Image (tube, rainbow, N blue to C red; front, side, top):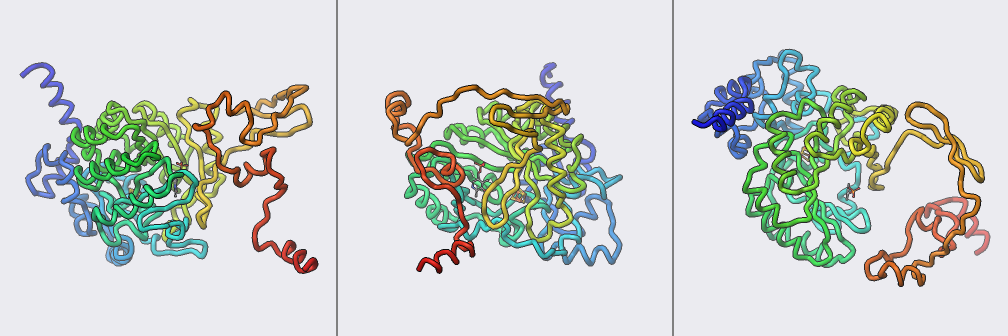
Length: 451
Ligand SMILES: *Cc1c(COP(=O)(O)O)cnc(C)c1O
Ligand code: SF4
């Protein structure tokens, strides 16, 4: 045995630690390193009942708590991969971020007044089954409602795990056809559930169909596999994905404890495959609502070539009230990142507007005041400074079709669509001076006077 092989075995054993061996032994179905690292074995042996959880972890709940938990899992099903289960620190499990994200609590049965089954109105913005078309140039395509683990904080709790299903090619073709017939779509975001729950040949087929559409410029995949089932990132999967560049991959780490030897290996495979990697975290009470935890997470992410993309304010989904924090907590976290650490290590903090308004970015305030020729700003240290504006600046009048653009920018390539929203108020060639809600009473009264 060469030195390299010895080293390799040592590394493999690190990935298969004593806790994992104990769980595999208790599961009993041929416990071995090669099975442990087989993603299908992991899914087959996912923990779906309270009894299984108690047996495998040795954690016991009293009768009263068990009753409540059984009711909770009847409403929002339980599913934890053996791998993710092995990350729970049993000694202090009640405070463990992995336990909280995977096992949940009977508090999920509490529904507050402001909470909805579909807070983002994804169903209302759905032209065909599986597609959410909210933004002008991109769509969300739900290609499976399976996940290897059911996150307790999932926004799509109402869908994920409800009826486990992998859509047929025929169902997916409806979505593909919509994308084909909608030329403004240049970015397709595959989501779910988890798209990597689909078998390799289905992923290959789906990506080949979408990438054939001429107006689709990029495809994105949102997956939690590197976090909850890193063994899903196989060499075969990578070789399939490589055929469909440019492909961006976003994952979902919420806590530094989730970054393990196995997840690092999965991320390295993806990064070596040439896919730009991003991460979307959700701000969760008692899981990661702490500037120090978040800073440690983003540092670990960038060390593994993952760029923090979004930090989400927890949605108003049913059963998530115990996970929600005030928005102030997110602002405090951003305050502790901006300026304090590398610019590429900080995510954009967003609130997904209830009712389907899309993501709204939120930041601490850096502009303190403003005059006609000076802006007063503060930096991350609290230093107050001024920026002197130019004495003369000739605004260019843009009618979106001017000579300069035609000559210099090659108009074929630039966006010719009309300005919308606030953009419209800022543009020079549009006379709109205000945006008024359709049901504004004052304006309705005016119309009555004049009619
Ligand atoms: C988040 C989201 C997208 C993608 O938004 P980006 O800001 O481009 O990442 C697209 N469609 C829907 C419905 C979304 O929720
Ligand atoms: S991986 Fe995503 S879709 Fe699946 S349960 Fe977790 S948060 Fe929900």
